[in-house]
Amino acid sequence: MSTPIIAVSSMTNANAFLREGVGPAMEKLSQLRISHLEISQHIRFDEDTIPQFLEASRKWGIGICAISCRFDGTVENPVPEFLWQGQPLKIWSAERDFAQLVRLCRQFDCKYLRFAGFPGMALRSEQQVRAYMGVLETIAAGFADHGITLCVHNHADEFMMVDGKWLIDWAMALAPHLQMELDVKNAFVCGVDPCDQLDRFSGRVPLMHIQDLQVCPSGDGKDVWLKPEYRGVPAGQGNMNWKKISASAKRAGTQYLIIEQSLFYGQDPYACIDAAANTLRHCTGEL
Image (tube, rainbow, N blue to C red; front, side, top):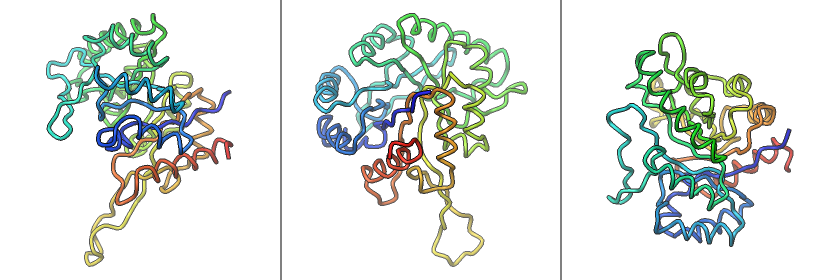
């Protein structure tokens, strides 16, 4: 069993990519001993910036471990555009941009594509689920023919029950070429033990999103019955057992532990990346 590689989702330092540029953002990651980056849909990754990513990847020795795309399947209302400062960000479509995504993966020597979950509200019956997963399996099998693995990232929808099964269970059964990017914080919030998921789907969870969950006081202290606030924080600063999770990930054959954080509560994003990476290094025996 090989030790998973620590990586970062570009969502975590998206503002740096968008405001400072690709090169400076990649340089800062290299200074933190980060060797791999996942391209999220929150940054510009299009015909204009792809050459910059290729150059920066070579210059700073940072590989691209996964590229984000979208999958609409049988859903009539597809994923809306992402906007940054009023400008749309391109999201590559697994269906319409199939050939371009294969080309991108070859350019970056990247083996994984990932998309951000299922449209749970549109999949409320077994018939709807089977139709959607049938299209998904066709696309995933097509990518597999090119040596590329398509992964689904979980939010909450993937743990919705449809006719007695979670959506993620339907997916893994009906789309055998599909694999999973397990977001441990999202699973934890849904009452799902990420280690159980790793054990159940061992060999099919090559990617993981790493973020801790912290319970914090809320309000000004005057209302003693005010409910606490739940925050996503760097690994090691919350309530999750990272030694157990890291060990389960290694047993399951996970390839990349991808640090992801969207809110920072006054902390510097790079300090959060460094803190999470050091926690993971301790847990995986790298420190």
